[in-house]
Image (cartoon, rainbow, N blue to C red; front, side, top):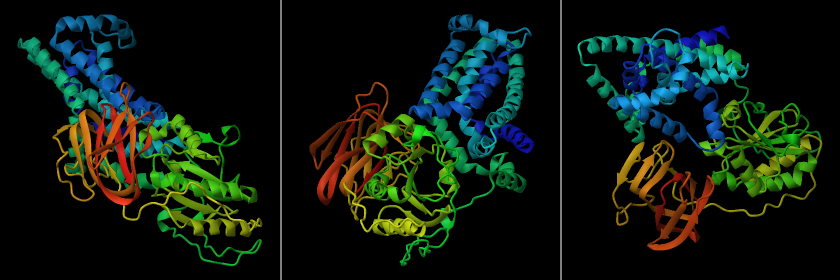
Length: 571
């Protein structure tokens, strides 16, 4: 534990000196150079507090209700705008300071002012600074969670950053004191206020994210934490704490070797490894009292672990088979456990998952794997992915993606027979089966991460596109029209927002959600004719078009402001 605390402290200090702090540094120095002597301390303390809360808990709360990260960014923007304008307009500063004076009692008792407002400005900057933590803090916090020390690790990391940032802020303040003595104080104060306003404006336009992305791409080796992250001692210690992987899907091959099975006899399937347990999970559904299951508690049963997420069309098309197997073989000792491992933030909401379970008629146990801890314990890489575990807790068969359902059912029957519970001759009868197209347009995302086929590749930020209705897209091509706010894995319609798509499919799907106040309306035209109008109510997968056969079409999609799109899939 001590090693992890020291490591987190040093990593936090190194992060504060790395290039990723550049989007925060101008605002930090500007805010700390004005007000009383306690303001820099207030700013750094506020930044450390909100940074820690974001890392440990607030991000999970926001994800849990399906709001996403925009709420935190919007809050930070409002605070930075308010205090930037306050520096530009002194009368406004007085009005803002007055109700916050009581907070100054929480700070040091030395002379000076500005601690309370510094606390709020620093709090806003904490949300912007959080992405600097990167994978190293995530890895350390994940490891410490197993022993209940997540908060201590996050505080140590934040403290390391706070110490370095406070020194930078105090250094900048000393420079500004000399400027004030030269009689330039009021002018410089307004200029610093302008920097805060400009910072907020850059956040609105997404330029801070662009800068962070550029830094990550072009200066990856400048990070002062890289040597810590890659050190053999740290990696060895992390492996010791986690106990190392017990099973890795990358080294496990699917095996459905035919074999004559008799009660208690080997099924003919090899042992691929010991099945990892369910770790780092959240809410359980369809279990008595919502109590968690364990692999040890399921000894003697044949267990099918199904990794899925409710907005994935490939996962949804496997559900008829899973439900049929559960109905036919549960009495013989089969237990299906759906591990819901989300791809998008809104899929972490327990309410959204519960609604998806009800609407899809799932009755077997499902557990939320919001942080992908169980996913990683299995070394999983696919949606959907099925792992067949025998009565002794050993992985015997794997099946990745759609298809091979007859072979999977055969594996269930043979493993049940091996366990001494041979099923009847009657096989499962799935209903509502949808056969995917073999020539469909490839999946694509609306954000730059995993986007393909776009005429103008999307980039993070707010963008204005021209009218694309008469643009030749080419086969499997896509194009934005109107104004969009694009994030790494999604895009939100702003004004006159459209998507033109050239597709080959029988069915066209798009994962959609909407923000507060949006009408949620989406209009779809096929080959120049309005064919569908739908209203987005929940964050989920929507069907934009269905055709009698697999065929080629031009779709024009118009989205009302506030509607967010995530990923196109076809089948």
